[in-house]
Length: 319
Ligand code: PMP
View 1 (cartoon, helix red, strand yellow):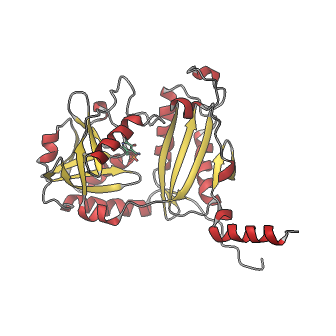
View 2 (tube, protein in one colour):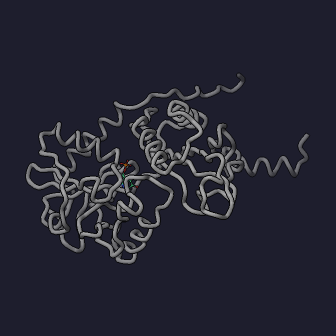
View 3 (cartoon, protein in one colour):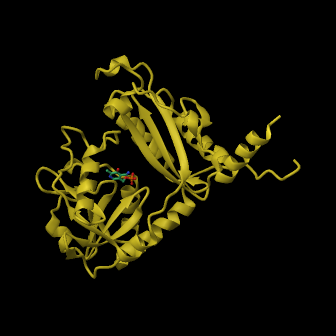
């Protein structure tokens, strides 16, 4: 039996929402958030040695689940990181995590680290990879971002050279992006544009970049040094369906400054319009017609396409 004090503490925890903690998929099972703890010897923490994915679900539909799982396994393959689960098991684990947290609209973070090793770099010392999945309520970007458009600046930090740390790998080493983000904040803008070592536009810190010029919709090719975004891919298809001439091409800041419209794409941000770059007004300085049209088309596919899952029925009192 609870004493009055423990009963009171329990009650206070309920009021604070603490007992409604998240369930995390952690090394093969669902555990409470507090139990999902990684060792200080995990090479994901010590060296950023690991891979991850950010996925979204809309109205109990996981958007592009198999594409995200494929990209995770491809990043791991190049790093010679063995994921101790099959793709099917991984997809099931994502769905189970969403169901355990009763989330219909969520942001899902899937992480695989090299696992526990010693203080040296050698990944062979890490016997089993650590796998965890967090599904949480989606923290939406402020509405005004989409209404006014973001401001961007090109930053001094260049995008990782593909022969050093290929941006096509979605690894836990995001310091290149973090440095760029710090520089954008220091410059007083919303987001950074990273160029490559040759001065060509690559991408932003967590989004791909597109420009519209007449009927052309242009985005950089993967070899300049970008993550091949899954939203980018979906938007290229939507653009072609809308009759735009979609192409991957190398381009410079000048092409962005003189574009009719510029927008970014990413799982979390979806499609976000750009108003200014390096203090140059882009087009009319507000979300353009093509961007708005693509935003609408993208919304539509997120409500129709995806891997469907059921959520547990709400338990009625007395049952
Ligand atoms: N570039 C980078 C560096 C990213 O981290 C991300 C996504 N997190 C993207 C682009 C967009 O990719 P996706 O559309 O697959 O989310």
